[in-house]
Amino acid sequence: MYSPLAIGVYAGLGAAAGLGLAAGGCAYAAYWPGSRIFGKTLVAPRHPGELALTFDDGPNPAFTPRLLDVLASHDVRATFFLVGSHAQAEPELVRRIVAAGHLIGSHSWSHLNLALAPLQRVHDELARTSEALEQIAGVPVRFFRPPFGARRPAVLNAARQMGLVPVMWNAMTSDWSEPSADAIAKRLARTIDRLEQWGWAANIVLHDGGHLDQCAYRGPSVAAAGQLALRYRASHRFVTLDAWG
Ligand SMILES: [Zn+2]
Image 1 (cartoon, rainbow, N blue to C red):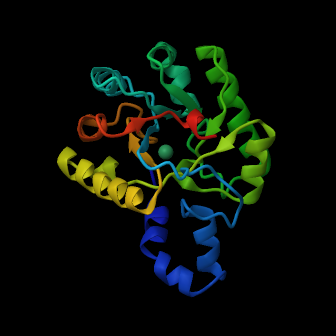
Image 2 (tube, rainbow, N blue to C red):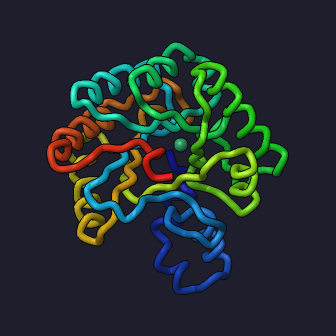
């Protein structure tokens, strides 16, 4: 999920770009998903026809099981960026995600804004999450999505030193606050189709959890994932992020 600050940065991007690398530019570098000013991150390759569904902020005992059923019914695999503390509270659910063939990645231990955190705390958040996920699921953790998309060079370097590939996205809508699954799926489909016209795969963010509430209501996000699977499964290939990096 994204803080009001991050949403404000999105809204202000045009102005920030116009100001160059002044204060607005730093916000752009730290938060804008496509920015590489603070270092290279995995977004999506030039593989039109490929879609990566990614889910942040879980596992959520109230909605992740439902999401797993939806994905299984469409034979689609996805990537789950798990909050470490949430995973520790729901280890069986983490194992169920992995057993279903999905990929898990790190979304930090406490969903901290790492762009603002001391470096030692960044290191602790990442190390603790990888260790817990690997212990619970028995698989290595290779991918990391910064909470709020917030990063700085030291955060990306710390992640890489721990063997983690930092991941951003190129298709997102405010699914966490949108009550209509139709609206979520429609907006994402518009972005997916535009990316495809430009020759890019789509790295799609949805939320099965909530960083402030592990059991957050995510019915519309889960239903939207089902709609996207139904719409694209015949014409596109759904991949997990290890297909790209
Ligand atoms: Zn998040």
